[in-house]
Image (cartoon, rainbow, N blue to C red; front, top):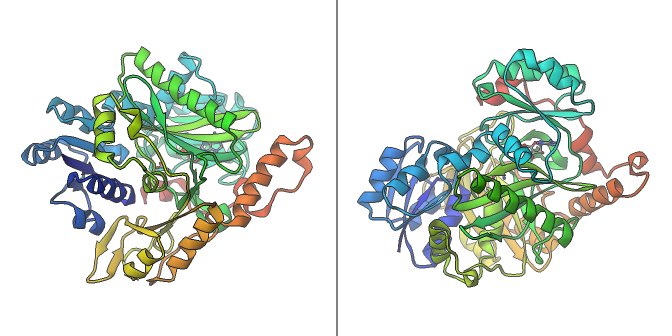
Length: 472
Ligand code: AMP
Ligand code: GLY
C-alpha cells in the first residue's frame, strides 16, 4: 500500500514509522524537511499545507491509496474534503466535522444542543458589548480562550495567567482586537482537577479507544510557564492513569461517543481520530477541548505500543469507515515521552542551536527517538527551529521506569536545549494522585497542595502580553 503522511512533526514521524513497519510505501507532505520522515519516505512534497491543491496533485501523482493527516490546520483548510473528492481514503474528517476542533464555540454549542455530559459553564463573546455580561454570568474563576485555532496558546486561566476578573476582561478585550480573536472568544468556568487525553479511532459504526495519556502542557518544570503544544506525556500499562479509574475513563469515552453521535445527527460523518482533552474534576471528567486528529506528543505514547502490526490496514479501515477489531491493540506497557525543545520555548524560543545525537546508544537503551521540526545539519547533528525538536520515548512495565529510561538516554543528546525532567517522575506522578485525592476528600480546600501541582493552579507567571503570545 502507498500511504501519504501529511505534516512534519514528531507525531508524523511516528505515523510514518508505523506505516513503514507495516510495509507501506510512505510519501509525505510537510512544511519542513523532517529528517526522520525523509529517511523513510520515497517522495516528499514541501508545502505549507494550507492550500489543498498541491497536496492532492502530489497524492495523485504518487498514486497513494491512503492519506493520514497529522495537524489540524490542513483539516480546517479542507484537505480531507479535497482528497476524498479525488477518491483517496483519508484518516481525518472533512472541514465541516473538523469544526469540532477549529471552532470551540461550535464544539460547546453542539454539546449543549445534544445534552452531551461533561460540558463546563461557558459564555460565548463575539464583540465587546457582550463582554461585561459574560464576565458577570460566570461568578467564579474563569478562563478566556479564543474560539479559533491557536496551537494550544492563547488560553489564559484565572489564578495563573491573570488574577482578577478585570484583568481577564482586559485580556479578552485585547484578544478581540487580534487576528486570533477574529472568530470570537469563550469565557468558561475554570475547571480544577487533573488533565488527561483520551483518543479514539472513529469509524461509521463506533469508536475504538486508545490508552489514556497525560500530557504536560506547561513549558517549564513544576508546571510553570506558558501553555505549549505539549512538552511530553506518559501512559500507564493498563490504559488508565494513576489518578484515573476505569469508571471515570468510561465516562470520558461516553462523552466521545455521544459527541460523534451529535455530529452524525447534524449530518456530519466522521472518519478519523477524535481526541478529547479532559479535566478530571471531583465530580467526573469534563471536556476541555476536542481535536480532530492524533495528539502530539500523545501519538508517540500510543503508536509506540501499537501491537497487531498492520497499522496501514488499521488506518485504511478508519479511512473507509470499517475497522477489523482485531487490528486494534496496544501492548500492556507504560510509556514516557519527553520533547527536547529550544531554550525559551513557550515564550520566546531561540532557534538555531545544533544538537549532536548518538542515535545508536539511544536505541541500545530501548528508547525510541522521533524528530520534530528540526533541520538536518550533517551526520548525527540536527538544528533546532523554534518548535519542538526531538522526542525520546521510553517504555517499561511502570511509568517511573519508563521515565528513568528516557532520562538515561538524554545524556546522548548534546547541545543547548530545554527538557522537562519532571515528566513521568515518581514525585510528579505522586503529586498528581495526591492532588486528585485532596480535591475529592472532604476538607480538601484547606489542605496544602503538593508543590508542583499547586504551582500550575496558583502561581502567577509572566509570559508577555496577549499580542506577544499570539503573534509568536
Ligand atoms: P485548550 O486549547 O482548550 O486545550 O486549552 C489549553 C489549556 O488551557 C488546557 O490544556 C488547560 O490546561 C487550560 N484550560 C482550558 N480550558 C480550561 C478550563 N475551562 N478550566 C481550566 N483550565 C482550562
Ligand atoms: N498535545 C496536545 C495536542 O496535540 O493538541
